[in-house]
Length: 372
Image (cartoon, rainbow, N blue to C red; front, side):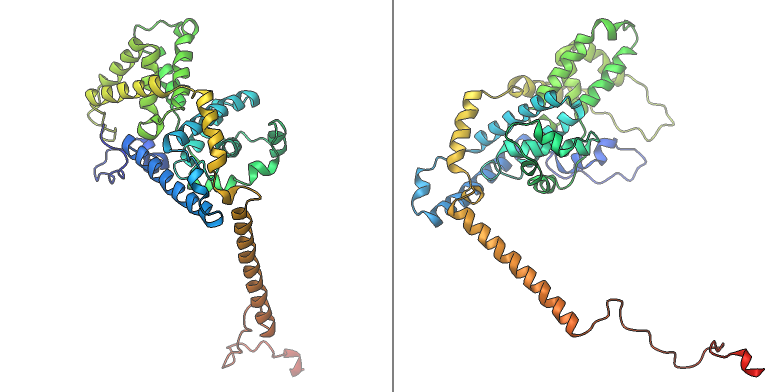
């Protein structure tokens, strides 16, 4: 499969249609190669460590030498753990699959542009999940949401909402593998030589495939492959023969001669390579991180967190004072502008209209009664 971190090619001048997925922001802006993902995370982590180290030194010279910063792998481990926590919270609230999958995508996307040393995944996870309930049209009141989560108040959720939305580039629509899986499962039931009672007697196949889809959310699969490829790989893990039968039915489906707008099919070899790669990703990395390993990273994170984000530190107070100073300057500038407008007696509706240089064809001031 070719690298996917490059921009998609321009649309062809022919009448051939491109799949709908390729018109999405997910296809255009949230696809990467594995190498690119690692590079992004490593670069971001190194930059964050450099900035935080300078902040430590600015207020307490020599203090950064005793700090054990978390690396990119440890950041990713912590984020993956809280992707799993999303699943637990969704079970508590009984949110549908769409909410869970969307919130997981939001959380993973957020940490492609931010570091856990600035924003702890626990707080971001709560905001990402609440945002997902709204963008998937499954809203819940903020009060009800916060009240059912221990040690959480409404401000914990709302304070980060704009930051999360901004980090997502306000691109809230997400294409998910569980939708594709359902479509494949329906197709399988209509294949020739398929038992008519497969849906009733072999529901365990679909449940098993769905479990693999959920495991895929703990991986980077959605950043590298399409939802339909992930769904097919999960069905292949659950029932290889059925998945292969479905794939052959699609490969052997004839294309009508007068149909020139059907998207081109990928080669069987390329698709097989992608499916095997996805299966490896899911089986090798689609697991909940070890709790002890996560706890160790979280403990170290408390000592290497950006001091500008820690309430009460010198760096936090200095940053807060600077922000208040800028806000005060902005308010003063606004007041000064209002005073200048008042002094000039500027009409908010603009200058009055000038009188016409010559009278019009009709003199509306003429009173016919004067002739009487």
